[in-house]
Amino acid sequence: DLTKSEFNAIKNIVLFGIDTMNPEYEGDTGRSDSIIIVSINPKYKTLKMISIPRDTYAEIEGYGKTKINHAYEYGQEQLALKTINQNFGLDLTEFVTIDFAGLINVINDIGGVQLTITEAERDFINNNSKFAYGLTNTKTKKISSAGLVTLDGEQALTHSRNRKVGDDFTRAGRQRQVLEAIMNKLSKMSMGEINEHIDVFLQQVTTNI
Image (cartoon, rainbow, N blue to C red; front, top):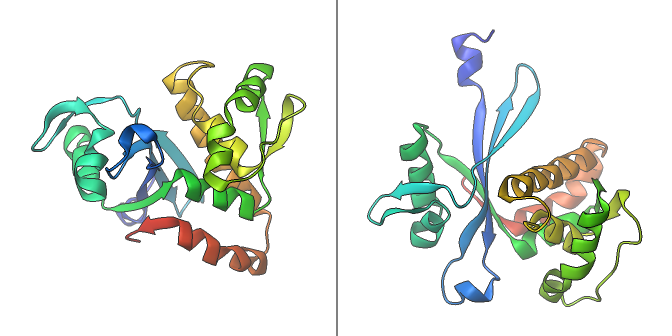
């Protein structure tokens, strides 16, 4: 059980993964391809992640009912936060926003992430990573086997966008797995090592924290 002060100490942050590179959205601010609420509990030293599916039908102030990921396109973080709060009875104020290229850069900066993938997921990454490698203008790399593998940033982004193997809920799960893999990698680093990467991380995100 938590006391009132312990409950109030819980920090909830919304993570927006923004699709600013999609040709469909040329000329606009992009849409929130990923919406994840990260809840940090200082007492138990736990971190939990809850995904809001991007196609959730929601009321967006001034725009009526439509997919919740449109809120970011219409009013960026402030309207996206307001939409989440009004539709789910929450009071979230803090956010971190990162786009596709930023996620690639963060993962590549720490030397990739380890994930367990299936044969079907490996095939999807190998067949669909051209877009991600195009963002960094680097040569496409293939994954030779399934199971526990190390993915570079381009492969991890492709994996987190996969809706062909499974459904949108499976896809949201992959996004959380990628974030967890980043955090697992960081948790094994010393503070000195983390400090070496922090400047790169901060350059890739927009946040009000």
